[in-house]
Image (cartoon, rainbow, N blue to C red; front, top):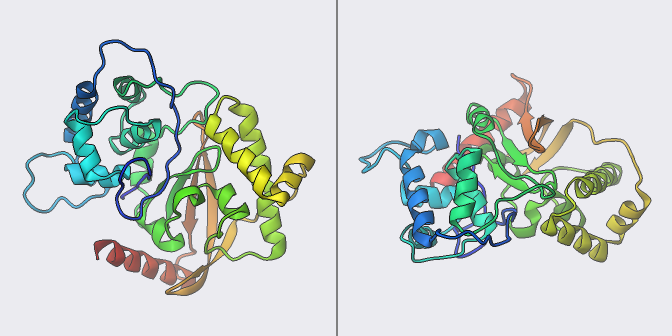
Length: 307
């Protein structure tokens, strides 16, 4: 199952979008260089089998690991930029680039920390929203084949989405990868809402973001997001100041898909203990028309990706 993270720092793969930026503070480490970073990326790229990332294995391959263009796609950066990073011709990758590469390479916590140091960055510390997906969680996600799955951080930024999720709901671009920004300032998504259900969702999201800000007071991107929402959305500002607590949205959602029409699915949110991540999973009751439509969407999405 292919799960992709997106970044918009430097030229990117067509259709890619913004990934969360953490660890933007440059460290004062001595002895690290751009070649250290490139060497680490190349070494770890060679050990990730393509099937582990949901990529086809067919054709002759020089290495058992990921091709450079495959890692670039999974990380949401351009092949040219990845080439320059690996060859030591590009320096100072941003925290969001390092985070995206770490996820695509399925690094352990210690390896991820080394990659940040090799980039001349201090790894994200306490007080910032975590975006690290552990190898065990990644393995679980890889087994949810054929099911729309996405991973969000505590600030409701979309970190990863598999092809089935993207085929079902589309791929949000830029700031719309943050669910709160999208529902207050953006274009929304394909989920059908009544005025009441939308207000319940917005109230819940404002409360979730307030709780997130209390847990991660040192996270600058989170502070910037809240400031923008308060400035540009009078409704968000009202909900933020009033701290209203309303009913949580129900677990089923009706989605208006542009090709197969409306379908109603169960939407479950799974919390990952110790990481403050949320896994969103869409399923349909077997044997129903909604299940048939969901299977058709998966096929249509795959054909679109291949094309």
